[in-house]
Length: 198
Image 1 (cartoon, rainbow, N blue to C red):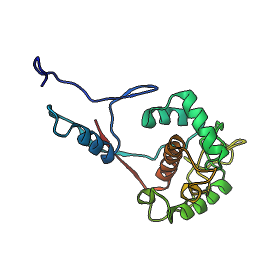
Image 2 (image 1 turned 45 degrees about the vertical axis):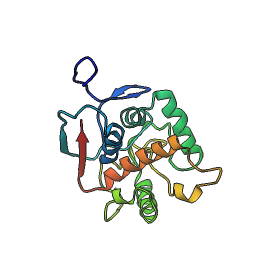
Image 3 (image 1 turned 90 degrees about the vertical axis):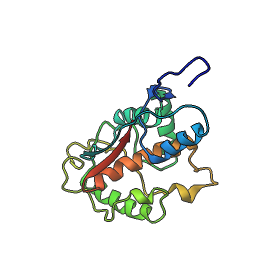
Image 4 (image 1 turned 180 degrees about the horizontal axis):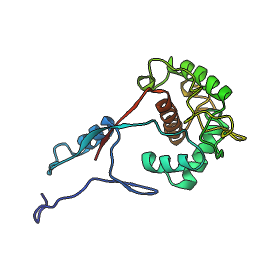
């Protein structure tokens, strides 16, 4: 309600790349609820659905810009700058790759890194119970398609180990690193289940 009547509106978040009206986590919903609590107005409707999806392909230089825009609201230039920072500090593999595949050796090494990260990750709940190499899964691993540089994935460095040092990730770098980690973990789950709230 307003001083001159009432109106219907749709919630959205303004970002560098435009308006985003999808919420991807319960934490985002609670944050909005906290902001509007005790103020006039009410939620008339919302849609919540569990969506069964195949895990997306791994990230490359183009797809990470798309994901960062959709998930984080980062524009192309911001994504490039932030991604370069994550790479320069050693937390992800080469960022300007055109490949969405890993070599067999890289897939084996990634499994070792993820198993190590799981022990102390701030996103530990997202890790599957067992992490095995993606070797043999042609959607993700193909020596012929991995070209000169393979897909963008996390390295074995844990951001928690570098807090308070010159390698500490900035807030934006941490968000992008976590996006890369989440995307990579999706490939290691037997099936992807995502929840969307709009």
